[in-house]
Length: 55
Image (cartoon, rainbow, N blue to C red; front, side):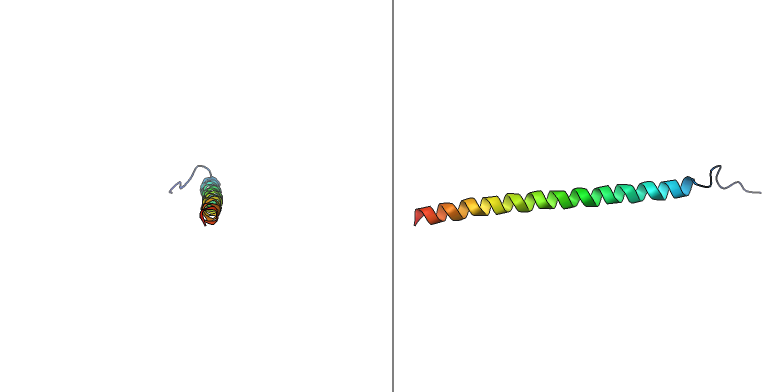
């Protein structure tokens, strides 16, 4: 007789943890993307104003 796991819920817990970690990573990446977009937009606006003021 083979004892697979002392706790049958252990694999389920691991899967749940993996899912939570994945969700956190996705949210983190999304936030980083938003920050970058915001940064690029700000830079672009500054550049536009600068070019406009030169003319």
